[in-house]
Amino acid sequence: MISVSTQLFLVFSLLLVLPVVEAVEAGDAIALLLGVVLSITGICACLGVYARKRNGQM
Image (cartoon, helix red, strand yellow):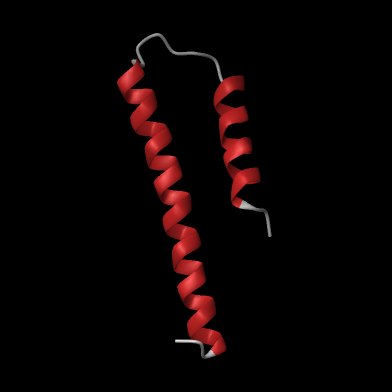
């Protein structure tokens, strides 16, 4: 499984490669990055809870 830091690096590198759209303001970019980070964190948290329940640790 890919680590979280590797996933974040891939997301940031993809954002740097994509052509810059002039209509996107700094606030939109910050909101997008925050949404991506929170989504990845939420998915990892849900997977952790699922793994603990499956192993009988909870």
